[in-house]
Every structure is written in structure tokens, then in C-alpha cells.
Image 1: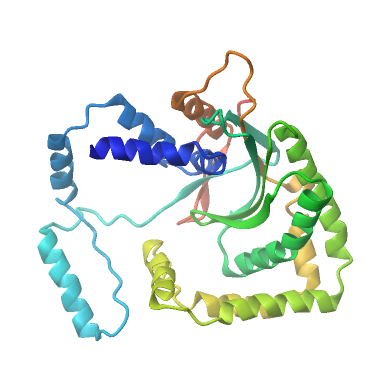
Image 2 (image 1 turned 180 degrees about the vertical axis):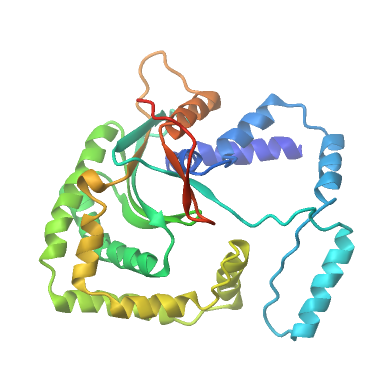
Length: 342
């Protein structure tokens, strides 16, 4: 019953175009990622027994690296005692060799790549297009600049793609931090019977061209207003302890431990000029852009059906189109795959 519930849970996510598009995008970009698509495929093969589960749990606990976060009304002594209690209950041995958290992400070439897949839900009338623009390894200053750019972009993006072009109600730009590699994306959900995904992709590029003009003609007062607004957002007090815990746990999980990250980002925002924002945007457009488009379409040709295996095969072909990996921990590049056309 548990296996069937998990199958249903995975499938209910994957039949949503936006969720499927995200899963495929991350499968293309992240090294050794186990996507929902792959997990669902594994469950469909069967052969998972209670004995196999118990054996896995036993082996998993043999050697562990344990790291925790205690936050709230605790002393440092109580925190250490609590962590020691947990380790004792786990009855595990330490790792034979220390393994740092390390993420590897595909470095996209300076060209446009498109991954087109059919939605697993043929009754869904909507298609979804996400165009992702990759930047580089995470830096506090660049992340703050990217957040400022997206904040400037939100209103004109909706106005151009939703109000003017009437592509769909679900239109938004967003910052992307893919395992330590920065970028931004624009997502549009549209009716498959009204617009093809190719048209939507083209309109997104047209918007960015118009946004460049808007950005360069922006007044200094407008720029300062947006900077001040973003700083105020970062200065807002947490509404409950859980928000602060989630933020701090992310620092522990990624082994960055920059618990005053917000302070550093605010300092960076105060140092920016309009020229910095325009220069960053221009540095990620045209021939300088590293662009990946994910098209999830419900427009089925006659006689065509799609399975989880088909989706997985397409995504792996797209992944192999990249020449290098970002190695976020050491910030070097490792040649892995050769370029193929698709």
C-alpha cells in the first residue's frame, strides 16, 4: 500500500506541466540527480519488498555524517547534549572518509537549447514554457543583483506577455539558484489550442528586447526606489521561528554557514548603481546568453502517446548536449560530455 501511495504521489506531481518541466530542467542541469521521473519509473518496475526496505535502512545507518541545527531557547551545552543523544540513538559509526557537500551542475554552452516534451496528462488544455538563463557560481553580490533585476522585471513581464500578448494568466520571472549556480527564468503557461510553445518562446525573447530599452531608460529615482524596496523586504522580521530556522538550515545543509547572509546582501544592494544592473543584464543576453528552454506541450499528434520512459530518454539526451560541469565546491570545470545536436 505504501508503494502504491508513493506511485500516486509522484504521478500526481508529474501530470502538472509546470512540475514536469521543473523536474526535467533539473534533471538536465544537475549531476547525479534522481528526478521524480526516475523514481516513478523505478517503482513501476516493482520488486520492492519490506525485506529490501529493512535491509536498506540497516545499511544506511552503518556509517553516517551527522550534523544538526538547534535553534530557540537552548543553551550551547543543551544543544551539544541533544545532538549526542541523537547520535547515540542512531547507533551509527562515523564515515570512513570525510565527504564534503559538493554539487555539480551542467554549464550550458553559449547557444540556445530546447527540450520539448509532451505532457503526461493529455486532458490538460495548457502548455508550459520556461526559458532559463544561466549565469555562474553563487556569489552574494551577484545574487543580490539578480534579485534586483527580477524585481524590476516582474511588472513589465506581466504587462507585456499577459496584458499585451494575452499569452496566459500564469506569467512570471524568477531567480534560480540551481545547487549553487545562479540564473533566472521566465515561465508562461498558455492554452495549447491558442499558442504553440514555439510562439511563446519567441515572445519571451521579444519581451527581453523591450525590457532592455526600459532598463536603460530607467531614471535614477526609479532605480533607487526598487533598491530601497528590496532592502526593506530583507529587513522584515520573521513572522515565526520556522522562517529563521529554514534559512539557517539551508546554510547548514549546503555547508556554507553564512548565517548573516541577509546583512551581506543588503550591503551589496547599497553599493549597486544603475550601470551595474544594465551591464549584468546585457552580459546574459544575445550571443552571451546560456539559454535552456523547456517546453511541456499537450498538443498530441494523432496516434502518439507518451510514457515516463520517453520523458526520461529525452531529458538525458538534452543533458548530454552540455560540454562542462560547474563544480560548485571548488569552482572548476570538468569536461564530461561532448556536444550533440537535437
